[in-house]
Image (tube, rainbow, N blue to C red; front, side, top):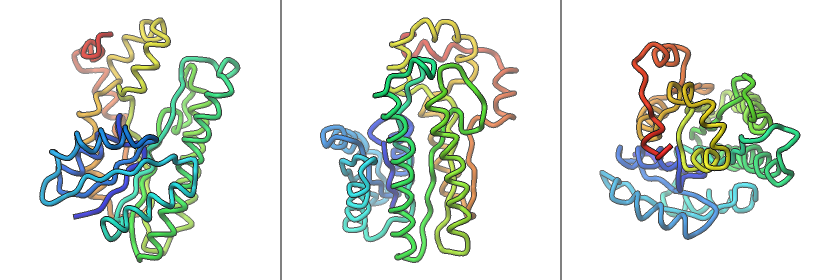
Length: 264
């Protein structure tokens, strides 16, 4: 049984990953910005735990390195060690061009996406070196592959930067007991995505055809990602859901309206 910490796991793909780890008998520390959100998530995830796994929680602002360190210390105190650390916390605002993105939204994306992952990686690497081993996965997103997409300039820049950061961390931890990898979950319909859709319904309407081809539900993707993370044995692992092959199959398969589940 592994002990797993997942940042930004009270909802979205982080929450889906937490549920899948628990179902496989691995203990998980769930994190979010507020204690209320964390407590609610832990309460809902608890029944999914099997084989003695524990669902724990800790409110953490990942942009504050001291809180990130406190998260590591809490996980070790409760579980004994941390085997797998997933830097998943992120913010996306993808309804405006770069020039129209507000300063608040720019700060939110840069600080949470970049600083949160960097601080999380620093804390986890130090802790894992001290305990002798461990594995880190950074969850990337749209733009990390270098493709330009409408209204995703700032968000994509943070994720592209994290791709380079993760690759550098792989090299810096070479020949240690710490393995580093990245996860690209594809285009998922999450709570955050739905909030974005509510802000810009015309954008969803204009892209509906392609969204119905490429978008996926969290509960369909999370089991695959968790299985691949648990099976990973080498540093530098790149786990991707929306591969070129899967994308091609989506375009060739009968079309479904995946958005109707959410009233869109």
